[in-house]
Image 1 (cartoon, rainbow, N blue to C red):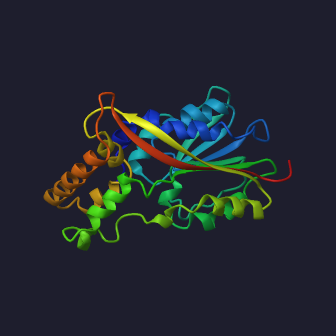
Image 2: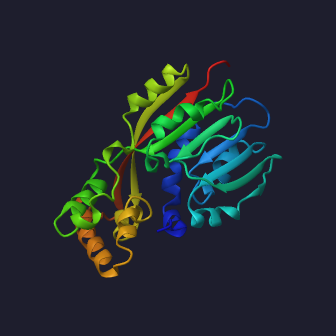
Image 3: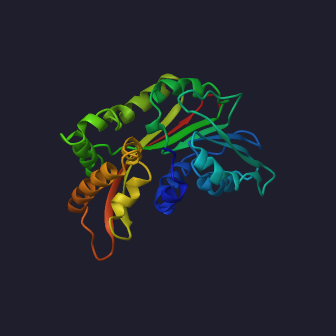
Length: 268
């Protein structure tokens, strides 16, 4: 089951906010025409607006494994305002290796979907020149109700046989200290932090709408061949979300914790 770009973009502003905050901590890059890789670029909206906006002379490539996302991103490809370029390419991040040197390797809310990404980071870091940067942010909230209730439903007798191995485990993201230690041992200057956003979401069943574009996708994919079962699971999960995240007159509040890392290659 491919990603649904339209569903994902329904909350584009809130999803872009952490990327904005991540890039605010990225220093100036070496060279006048930096080469940038955006891993897990999705529909390309933040690649074009935030990366090309910050570095208009850069050669930027957004990588993703979703045909639907890449189809949406393709409309944004081409020359950028400062003489740089923007392109998009298919890549499986579980196997991706840098082709040559990059001044910035960046990822926005994608590495939690990449098993073994911690082990891949040193190889990616080797592609950076002195002063190059590896930066990423990932959700750090698998213990939050939005995920805990999903796992609770999936483990129930009705669903366990079909969904036991479907959802991500707590090990999909490492503890912040793991990333700090990894980059420090490589000689990088690492800045690692956490932030909890209080997203105020509009509409009915807003949290369900949010997670339908991301974390609920594995369940929807597993049950896609059985619409009746899919709808029954969603109804059960919706009822639990409504209790955990009550709708208020001004919207539904979704607390969302994220982990950030900006690692600067030595030798500047």
